[in-house]
Image 1: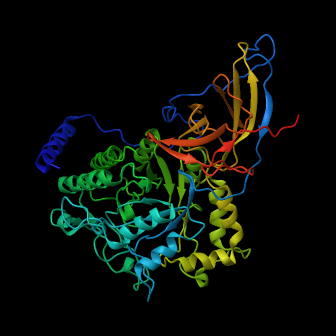
Image 2: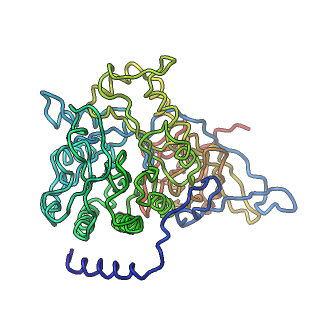
Image 3: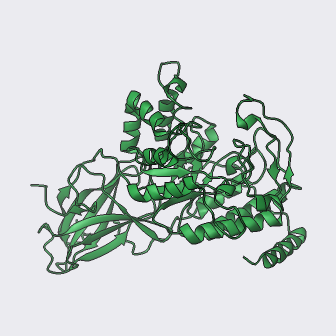
Length: 521
């Protein structure tokens, strides 16, 4: 990065802002149900999705297509892009530490925990950079990436600019030399044995240096990981604690005024959205306690076809309304700790049920795509396993229902008035969330004689009903020979990822379904 050019641009922008009309960044609260967030991701190769009339006077497709194959819902756990239980490798303390155990062993056991199909890591900025212009990862980051590759899992992460749970400042030393720190009004009282209550929680001043260094860091990270098969999504870094858009319980922010705060965080969002052109961003729907334009960031996130997260689920009704009425193509990540350590920390509700299970079932109610496997500040595989051994029911149900679970419920065969053969694929979704992107269907044969491909509309099939799409077959193809196969992929930000069908019938090793009549009528 040419920092002098950046500073000139920043100063010019500041001068323009001084004479520009008042910035209208705040988005007033509104119900999300039927709210117009736009039409969603662009669909290429759209398949015809009906209607399919077969009776006069609208029998455009000739004879009535007949159901030739069907599938039933499966209960298997899926490892697909855009969904999954997510094992936390690091939360707020950095590297997971188990006394007497090597770091690589600790991370290995977490990474191969069988319920988790994704890994989560949340480093301080200083954990990934020590000097300007160069990435330099702590060991726990590098080990996590290696283990993700080894076990066929992807990583989601956020880089924190402010972390109240560590005594060391989250910013690298080279940034701290140029960036003042400010104390906000208020205090945070609690257990003095915990790092959270042993310091003043100073907030960095978002001056030109910090913004410039931030852009450099994001660009370096994106250069390495944008579009990488190892990365699932990137959490947006916002104002305040953990980058989640607030400095609660402290008052306000350390900007000259609200408009300056809004301009700054829209700028930070734009930096991230530009850098991560091939990877979904996930923005926390934190209420705007600190007055820094969270509502606009959330609105922009949805309109840019990025995703959402919430750092708990038993929360305010406003957040639940947003999660439950988000566009079908928008994924939602729910973060809740199952325990704060071993089983001795498990809290029970008035009916004797673990509160971790209460959170799981409410995440199912909200239609989560992702859910955290997390034992808060005592991260280790043993804590996860102990909870699962004692309370398996809710976690098993979560693993079998989370996200989207698509399958071809019906397959019809027919011929049009020109005697051309086609299949109508009736897709259904047995999960709890829409498809967070665009679902592509492909009919193919291994020898390449057949390759017919196209997409459903964004978010489909939704969690209710059947979405049907027509696919014409090349002439001379015997659809019932056992050679023709159907596969699914999800397209997100121009990238394609395989999606195994969630059906009870046997699948091919690549997750595709062989087309073969199983309806005897």
